[in-house]
Length: 218
Image 1 (cartoon, one colour):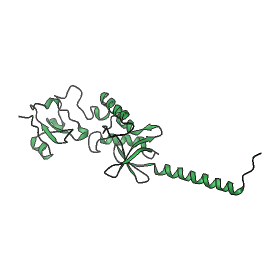
Image 2 (cartoon, rainbow, N blue to C red):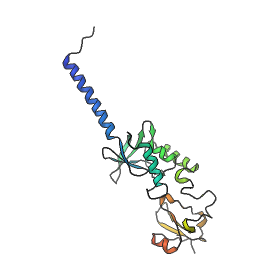
Image 3 (cartoon, rainbow, N blue to C red):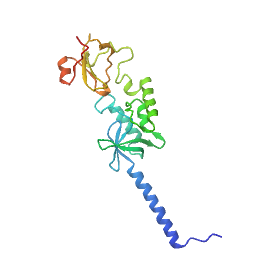
């Protein structure tokens, strides 16, 4: 026959359970999302700022930026999230795979087309890359007509107010160039508004924005 618990043992058990419950509650509270900054960054109730590793969403004032932030808000604001493979980046933020239950938030943002993958090393990099490419193929989010010209119309597209000068950013050097109608590469240039590319009406306007004339222009 088992012996009944003595009062000291019972008291110790109660204290232990209470401590564990407090620890769990405190962890949940600290991991609650208090603010969504943009489409790839948020702040926890603990004050920790976190960025979704492998995700580069548009800046808030660029094409798709507001939509990306809105979607991340729907997914995590005021909800408890868990961070995996957390690491610090140079800006002091934590980079992490972010889970809400068993849903990988990084993957959701990419597969719905609200960001580009930055190919940072993590255990889910192949999953994130696949989600990124599927969104491109299906023309979702920033890959849709929201931020891109309709397929097959690149050479005829025009910007706001009928402007035709294309401001393009080199993906390797990040240098800014503008292309005029008649420039050799003009028809191949597709304006990607989510990264800050845009149309200009005059060359002086393009120059003032930091773009220089492309060497392929006469």
